Image (cartoon, rainbow, N blue to C red; front, side, top):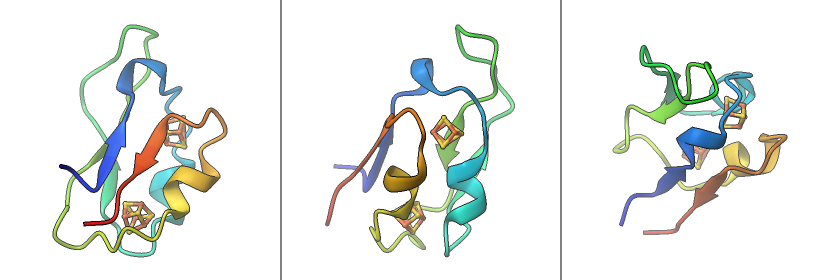
Amino acid sequence: MKKVVIDEAKCKGCGLCVHFCPKSALAMADRINSRGYHPAELVDEASCISCGICGRVCPDAVIEVFKP
Ligand code: SF4
Ligand code: SF4
């Protein structure tokens, strides 16, 4: 199970999760989702500490964080 699951289709590309991740484990993807936004993605799972900050700051609550 991934530590962070992002519902990419619902992401509006605001970048808040990327900005607030203390481990720089998230980034905006080059691809574009069905709404026309670059979605956030987990790019460094090994660095992720499952702190849950990304899930809390996402205004649309499209991120779920799981403890390993
Ligand atoms: S759970 Fe914490 S460390 Fe992991 S991606 Fe989210 S903000 Fe970053
Ligand atoms: S905070 Fe939520 S809506 Fe904003 S980029 Fe991250 S996943 Fe997408």
